[in-house]
Length: 631
Ligand code: X8Z
Ligand code: ZN
Image 1: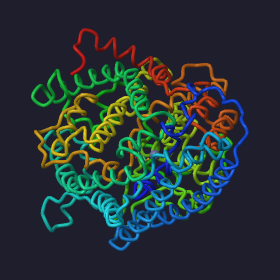
Image 2: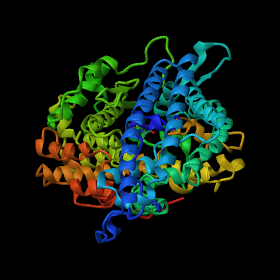
Image 3: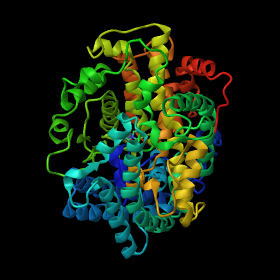
């Protein structure tokens, strides 16, 4: 999952889509979003000079496609070596290779700009390649000044390294007293002692977040210089341009989606706050206002799954968490369960190289980036995942998520390099999550992971609660991370207010508050991997919405007529074929067209996620009746 042109490009490549999708910005004539696309212009004879330019543009695009693939693959190879063995030499090599890729992107985007004026005269495929190259949005282009470009590449690598190696030590100089992110996260997941939880939260945020601040602040200026060099106002505009619509329309679309789901989130927040208040008392969790961020069972309060035991609606109903059954399996067997789902849809088995080259566990004696990722390192069916798998239900879901990236890579690896990306980056993140939605209790029982399935209404509500603590709790977090970054890059948040702004947005969207007063010596966004690794985050917000649209469409193809939450497309070849068709398109056409082909819809739309959680929403509204919800 990670990276950027510099680093960002590659980062994106490894986690999901290399560079993103398709933008459609002002300069590309006739490239308005599908719905608004004007009628085809009246044919007129092509002038000689146009014909020469068109031929030149096509030759340029073919050359650019091949050149980019080469430098991006070199970057991914160096990055893979580094992230699976963090050493100074590997970091320097990755910075160099990613820097070269960023330089190449910058040079080629500048050249591509020269063909924008004739874009409408190009054949559809060439025009699309031009759009993807310029507005792909996933790449971090280098600034014009070579010194700055080198600095940018090094900074990006340093930020990932600081994050990957981050540890919190009780006694300085005593490695045995140190805890890494996984161990600190476990405290937040399992402990219900406020002091212990606070210490783990503060440890990570103070140690790693603060260390990232000076790096990130420098990064803002340099990354913006790169974005400007290729014709964007700043990185915010560059990122917002990757969605086949004007950047401000995209930003407005994310607001629209949030407004659709906000009432359901507010109900969940209301219920969680009341339960936590009962558990911890008024002094720790007040009955009104925001919830303290450290108490939600996750370092960033992004998903609340680990609070399930406290938030379980009905006691005495069979659990649907398969963690106990996973204890007798190894990580590889968990990955095989994931692969078996995809092959049940008619997809290919993973190639032998997947099993040879992937990393499923932290290798002893090495520092690695444990944050899960997937990549096609050589853009040639060289599928891999990198994870430090824990034997938990949550990690079984993450495995399906990562394999979704790999099956996307696999479906489109014969496309030109520029089209080897998700329809938009939200699609890439949604593929595996959609598959995981089919891990219904009935499916899990079929796989021997659950002993019995309870089909009562109570069991349905319990199961929905567990899924909602992942999917619904996540929505405002996924939205606020890039709201914050857009503001940080555009200057809407002043450099001396970056941390304050983070908490303003956390309160506004998530209804959570910092556990203790924070200052500008802190840098809490830097405690999150994707900020340190410069991977855009709006993709996950989009994916959280899109996966339910995909699932609704697949279930329809499978002929399923029950409630959406009960549908599993396991074993269904019709659904699998439709899914594969979508994957094979990659970024070769605007995502609106690709979405339409699968779902008959042209907009990202939260009606499917709301349909899925309708039983829980009704239940929550009843539970919360008479309460003052909100914060
Ligand atoms: O980073 C990831 C994946 C790899 S693309 C494990 N995710 C986000 C996160 O962990 O913050 C998946 C959901 C959100
Ligand atoms: Zn992902």
